[in-house]
Length: 287
Ligand SMILES: CC(C)(COP(=O)(O)OP(=O)(O)OC[C@H]1O[C@@H](n2cnc3c(N)ncnc32)[C@H](O)[C@@H]1OP(=O)(O)O)[C@@H](O)C(=O)NCCC(=O)NCCSC(=O)c1cc(O)c2ccccc2c1O
Image 1 (cartoon, rainbow, N blue to C red):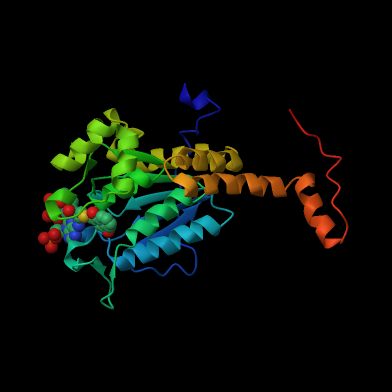
Image 2 (cartoon, helix red, strand yellow; image 1 turned 45 degrees about the horizontal axis):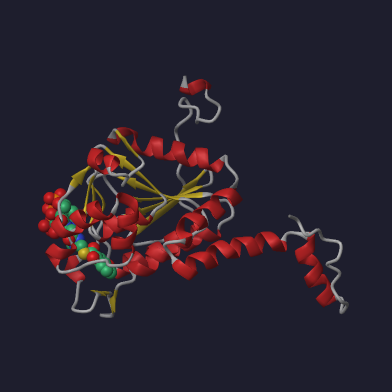
């Protein structure tokens, strides 16, 4: 059935040949690409892929790279190994005001990464095996889609470890799973398995661990066949109401960019450059 469905990827052709481009000399993460997909991997499995400020700095650079590369249409965020997507901030470098980098400066720079993923005008897919916990749980929440392996486990730990994410971590969670469930997740600090996460709308699908990457890549391939502008504007639209004026700005920027491609938009620019009054009379006032 699926093999003959033209809207679905061909299951007989699922291998993907990840390549690491030049200048991707990261310490805490991996950056790979293939077929228009960028795969960004938090590579600290010895601490369940907890992030330190340097990890976040590298992630920001990698997402910027994927954003700016016109060959990339979809981004996957994942964690190294089968045990964890990400376990949040590295508690070993937590200071009194944030997480210490090598120079001793304290950061909460994951908040900048969260905003970056939301405003990146391409779909970002969280590919989750094992734990997505604490700040790592918020990272998958921020992604546009979440694909979970059957061994995935989800939860917030903040109130247990003396932390909280009262931004997207609370508000976006409530919009995703409903207010009561979001409060339960934060107030009780329980863990939830992949099927429970699916039932509450926290992830899009659950697959056997061995199929996790194949299915994630299939979903990316499907999105790559679709209109990049439609996906881009839809992403901004889904974020607009929860991001306030910054969300409207993002959506409106798309309208401006599209307007620039029209003759009407170009007339204003050309008239200025040619030092003549603009002639907008030939453009229709559509109902
Ligand atoms: C993730 C776990 C549930 C995994 O349990 P498991 O039993 O499988 O493994 P271990 O517990 O034995 O862990 C193996 C190994 O990894 C180390 N480790 C795991 N997580 C971390 C971590 N977050 N930081 C540092 N190290 C970690 C662990 O110590 C072991 O090391 P060994 O040397 O002993 O082998 C479980 O590990 C777990 O619950 N981890 C902690 C989860 C957590 O509380 N995370 C922090 C939440 S707060 C946060 O992330 C956060 C970050 C921010 O930047 C924010 C910014 C702004 C607002 C809020 C923020 C925020 O809340």
